[in-house]
Image (cartoon, rainbow, N blue to C red; front, side):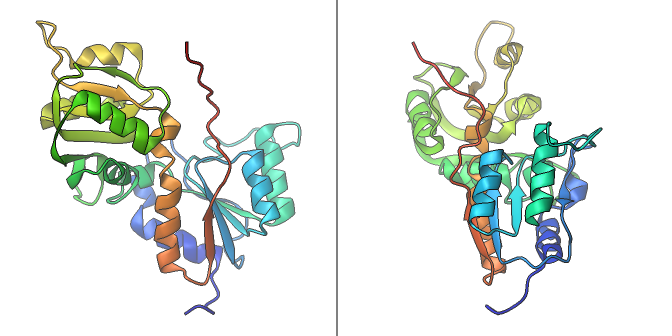
Length: 271
């Protein structure tokens, strides 16, 4: 088994058996974006995003493939030239003969995908989809329970620690007891209503706009659901290790590593 030759196509097929591209949102672009499906793969670098630093890391480690969560090519480029960041990365990938594969909202929607892994990271139990699809095989978000109740203040400390989130934006009383927790890695504002209906005590996600925070209040001004924006990068960074461990189990002859680069473009300033 350790001497088995693995091609880019093999890795793509395995990932797509888990996270069917049909699960992806209509705006998304997933799959093999650069390179040949028949390229032999010996080493794969996994990253949330593709940046020049990640590409340099792949070249220096002799990786033959990069797997990212966020696609480099959301939309068809109008040109591919070295002066543009995307064009530069595509040309360097081709020059270095490195395949690029992206698995995005189809992994968000897959059982055991991004939100399930986030729920596990927060030590939730009895995890299931927050908003299951009719096929029963996919859905969005996840919901589960803590082993025992804890205060919202303690739960915020848990998020800081487990997700390495330097800044949390939230609503809710810090004395509120937390047991049932709903989560969505990345942008999850459209799941606030399902989280309210689920009976969760708190919903953890990212990219929540100012007005979204009003949606958890009832007509009397009572906060029905604690809401936490823990950051897009912070709620999806664990996707790298999720993919690394999943792929390593299925392709033991290939070396899978997570990037050492921090691809988060956002910096934080505190008073």
